[in-house]
Amino acid sequence: MADFRGRDFILKAAGVPLDSPFISEAKKQNIPIMMSTAWFSKIVMARGAILVGITGTRGKSTTTHLIHHILRGHRPRVFLGGNVKGMSTLKLLPNVRAGDVVVLELDSWQLQGFGDLKISPQVAVFTNFMPDHLNYYQGSMKKYFADKSNIFKFQKKEDKLFWGDKVPSSPKGWKLKLLGEHNMKNVALAIAVAKYFKVPQKEIKLAVENFKGVPGRLELAGRINGIAFYNDTTATTPAATLAALRSVSKNRNVVLIMGGADKNIDMSDLVKNLGDFCKKIVLLPGTGTEKIRDMIVNKVGSSSLKGAVDLALSFAKKGDVILFSPAFASFGLFKNEFDRGDQFMRIVKSISRPKLN
Image (cartoon, rainbow, N blue to C red; front, side, top):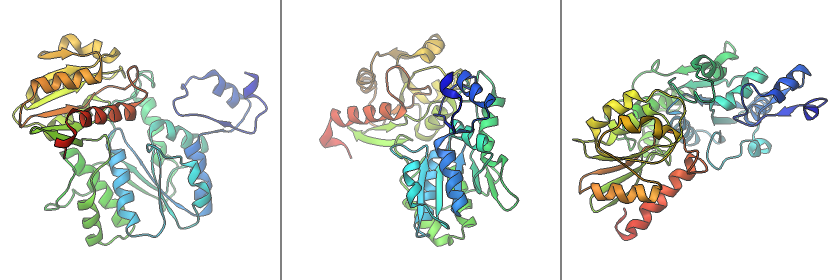
């Protein structure tokens, strides 16, 4: 406890428990609590940079990268940061100056830091709100939303919020590389933000049609003997896996690889619909898998991802899809969801490298 007294400030990492006694002690001592992305944001906003923050239960990564993709073709200085694989947001600090645009993907933990500093991005995007991280939020959607709402809670009158379905639909006739109806909503949000920054329609259309998506989100890993492999490792909720199934399934031609660590989310909607999309389900081990195993029919189990891919191949034939969309967190078998997706990509590439395209 002594470490949390008499300090200039406490830098809190993402995922520190809501009821941390150490943070409570620091607050009693009136010591400022800061998190790295929020700290960065406060500094660059004070410099005169424009912050575009994107959050939501699903779609925030795709929407973030698409907004950045559009804006960087229109403005000379646009930065990408936040909850992005391989990125250090604080490392951008020396480079950002007045007039620059910084596009940040913000998860609920990072937004705790915005709440602590009582700041919100000048331009906020809230994609959607669904059950997630309830293992962390002690089963409370209210607590989860309280963190998410910091994306707009401290906005000023001149600031802007783009909220889920409260934007026009994405234009018809555009040739998109993104799959699924859920991605149409992400595109619509990105277009709305681009128009706010006065990007011409012609430039928006070109950028949207050239956008290939984000790794690990319905990413085509390759095709082997007419079987398509999709890496959807970031699907850590039942809603995300259901959206993926709706995007790639045709006449129950999917062999689904799923399973992992429990997040205390109701899985019943996904479980009851699996039969509409899947010819077979391969389950990976985990605390979440154990809760639903007996509810799923037409399933087999595997103790490893390599074994799961081998099993999926034994059930698939030409024209089928092998979809890796776990619906659970990655804890246990993997370091994180990115490690999980990287392992899947390596396994697929090792199967028949010359035949991948």
